[in-house]
Length: 388
Image (cartoon, rainbow, N blue to C red):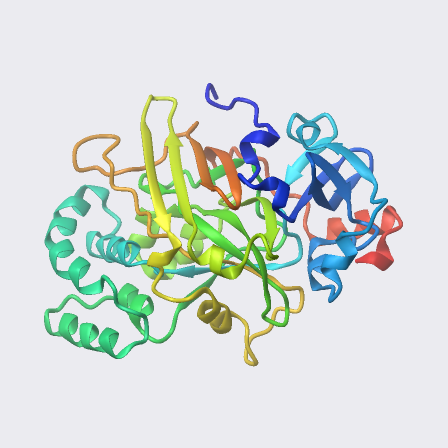
């Protein structure tokens, strides 16, 4: 892949990295396995002695004190994990459930309705978009999900014959919360992301990903790519699992940024997430998603994810959805956007850094072969069984 140039730490770190509390997960050649780690001054410090898993580390009530201690083993420079010298950078989660909230921004609601109306056919999408945008687009802007105004909009659109299951979860009282990927299956920054070979209409979904403790506390955030097959989901919403959960179709990273005085939930609510797709064919597409445009608050989504009726004892990460639904033509007029093998995808935010991946087919991406069982055996073999 011509565009798959080297990735270095300066490309990935937040703009205020010197003030950020950043947790990473690396495969350490020296330690012989995965390690939760603290990033500080461009160095990677091993937290396995505090907790052998990222899940266990984040569940500690003394988390901030535990990672602030002196004398943590120095595993090497961050760049040594990006060039393969010391190991490699992994997705910064392990045992947590990987969940996602869908249709949380007005613009992406409109595109989901278009997918449904077009029945997954990208060639029909332009005509459907032209017919629906003036009506649905104007109706949805500024509507708070579950509000009285949302109920009025629903009634209006039902009378017009334009109501959709996507609008139901977009502005109705109940959010769409689904399983994006299995624990341990997410890929990290620098890895390939996968598009299923049956798909001819697909896209990246740049998103903020919340890091949630088992008691529902939101500890921080990272970036994610909720890769989507628009033609598959457009054929039927019941194919959501096939559209979303495939080999290498979930990217998370590069790091978890914990909330502290330098980065608060209020800061998160104001961030903007940018997307840049650069193809080997010279195609370039950019976009941006402001978190202020979300129709449900992150806290509301977490409450719908994790509550007395639904628990995640190892914690969870939650993709918050995206307002970016690419429509820039690529293969021809009216065809809209779809990925090509070799695309470079960069998802970035000044507070959270940059998540960079390259696109390939799911059947050509490295297979997922290191799951929970392999992790447990590895940690026990390294004498870390009591630290899990």
